[in-house]
Image 1: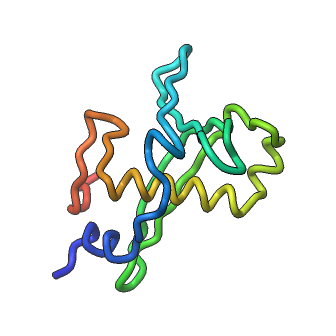
Image 2: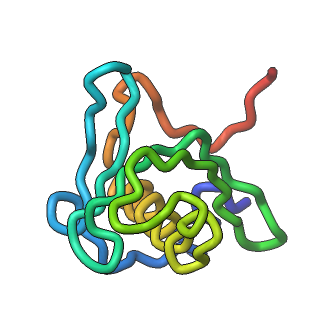
Amino acid sequence: MVTLWEKILKKLKPKKYKLGEDFQFYNFSDTNLTGIIIRRGEYAGVVYYYTYAGINEEGLGARLKFGYQIVQAGEFSRDLLEKDDKFVTLMGDILTELILTETEIEPSRTLYSEESDL
């Protein structure tokens, strides 16, 4: 039987974005949240954080779903970024890269392929 994690790894492809080069973690001084700052490309200077992330099984594959909050819009308006499919795809690609490289976003969390009893 194929686990959800195996479905995710099969469906997701590593992207060209690299932690430390294209984006990096951003620590906010007034909260315990960790965000992302985009360092290169069209959206350089934009800071955001993920409000949730989840994976939905779809047949033999899986779909990544996430929410986000833009903190600093750089040269753009927040409204424009929220409607920009290219920007939303970039955030999804960064999240995918973090998942595939098993970067620890929050040290207390562990990845499990089993469903919760909740």
